[in-house]
Image (cartoon, rainbow, N blue to C red):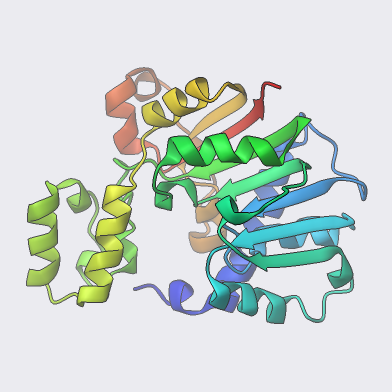
Length: 262
């Protein structure tokens, strides 16, 4: 496991840097972020992605996550922020929110690949969007070199080995046992296996739930790699970008900006 995944405060700041440098500019031609802009992050973890919006003075910034521990971490990380009064972090299942308010901007970054029943999830997200709201979705497609999140493994070598997560499920599970991963870790990896998502699948889900895709970008080098590894983001172009199935193996991140048709 890489140190950044166990050091939650470091991960928090990495999230914020990527959102500041890449996500906000990505949606800025679709919506202008002002202090009046309301922002929701679904599956926020410690809510590092919300920090740039709070830095910009947005007066209504909300994060929802099912993990109480990560929400509590987030509250600690934001405790000294000058605009903390504008922030609300909620430990709750999004399906349990009784009367959801609507937001100008919604973010789910590196989240949807962990969500079961993604069609139901995307249908639910419509309840949180203003008629002209923007929903940013960023995720690592399943077939990319580390689409199985194997960087989370404890094993030093196999946490750096690409593509082996696409083995058949039973073989993959047996392999994880063979290399000595704990039952808890194996359960977590299989949950990612079971909720995996591809570019084509998300396209179908968006169409079925009546979203308009305003912007879509496939990245050969994930913008987050700039923060993590110092690698400049690079879009997937050329021959690979035009071959639907083959391209999936070389897209390390997919960025979407969508709007619900209301």
